[in-house]
Length: 529
Image (cartoon, helix red, strand yellow):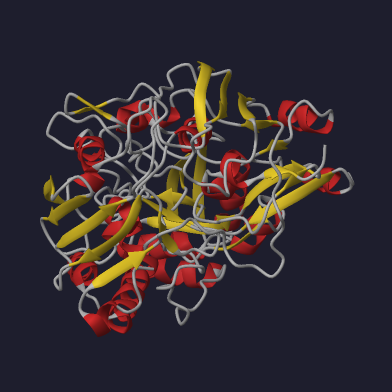
């Protein structure tokens, strides 16, 4: 079972996954997007309609489904965005805009949110979008028996109801200034309601209508003639092909069998760069590699041991060898430098064997021996990264026994179970979203079992704070706490690296998710025949 963007079926049922700048001044929040407009870029190109677009993705399997609650890899996430619309959308500039929600506003305490449903939107089955469809779509992920990967996201909702056919009112259990961002979660597709229940058969309000799907192999869709966005969905039809082997994907691209591919093999991407018919797209975002230690298991229950292991890894070497420079240095916290609440003043941790020895001594140890479970299933080159780490740590008196875990079943049998392993996060668009799903004391995907009272106090306070300056202070402190105390070694942030035929046109590519925010099929076009 291939996993990348999210975790295995064993973890389903919980989702591991800039609000308005004027909030503090006005005491209420609203964004209006009465018409869908592409980002105003000086270099913006004029799209063309037509053609059959073929995309090669690295992840997809026979257990995939059209049910948005189960989306967990590149195939389902891109195919899902082809078929469906969402209440909100993050554009290429990182700005939150309205998609099926035309506008929204919040109460002064950010606990009650009112959304205006976009009018004139038609589902593929001919039904017109209204408030009932939004309510049924969100409620599908709620409830005690929900198996949705977005369950933890919508569990924050106390009540949801319609105030007429065009308005949805959502009351939260506690204040959340970032709530509209959560509705961009790729699981929360808006589908038509049927007898009060969500229809998850694949009918949506997206740019393309489902033709057929062969899970683990390919999916086909054709352009929806009545798509409400007049400046999107440029292809006549799209085809997603699951090509898990990087060499096979590369060959398919260079021979013209596909027009674009995700996840270039960084060991050979320099060869693709020499091909004048191809464009290499490298986008820095929130994607990062981690090595979580269980903070409730010895010797990792000692914070000095954790710090020793953080100083014992050469991040620059990993950036150069593992990522071939396609990324940025990590600083043992999950907030990317592109995030508006990124702590710019936190010193970058460097490889320092002497400091590692110092912290070992503080922990009462002259040396240390630990076991690290490694696999390329965690991230490309995972085993190689573990070996480099092993060599780095030896200079600090730390012996790392690298256990090469099988890729098959890694997320079921190793992640969340072994006390020191490797992991991957696609990241989240907001600091609260990332922290809440992976670092909060009670988070189901708190992979390092970290519990820090001050951190959890700040997490709740920052979520309800409407003053951006105060939120920056809080999130900066939280990043410092993560870096210095949490159980996650985060050495690098990895760019999204894709390759496109020069025949494909596009404007600025979004960084919130891979493949233009998973929206490449509606945002890209054929620039030439």
